[in-house]
Length: 150
Image (cartoon, rainbow, N blue to C red):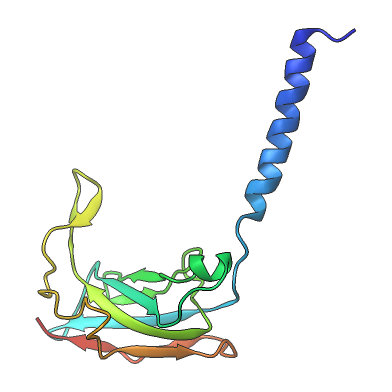
């Protein structure tokens, strides 16, 4: 006869195994192409500037919804790698408009905020002149440097 302790332990073990199996699968992912680039502002590397890639197509399906808002953050030398599902995995096939925001990092709240140091000049996807088409056949994409002004 099973005791409550054995029954609880068995149920907990089954729950952990099933939970771990499902979490490893995650949502379906679209194939991505690594994308990297560089941003300068007034000729200097833009440090911790956010680069956003907005899909021009309406996402269809769960995988496309997760891939709809890839981003990148520039390093100390102004370089960046685009992330969709995980760091540096790149972009799924499609057409994108590229925007830029340069917010300050607030150590107290551990987030970026405040006014855009670029004055919002490059933040609106409707007015951005920067576009990118990814066919999905590329091995990797190295973008031409973005030279921004304030």
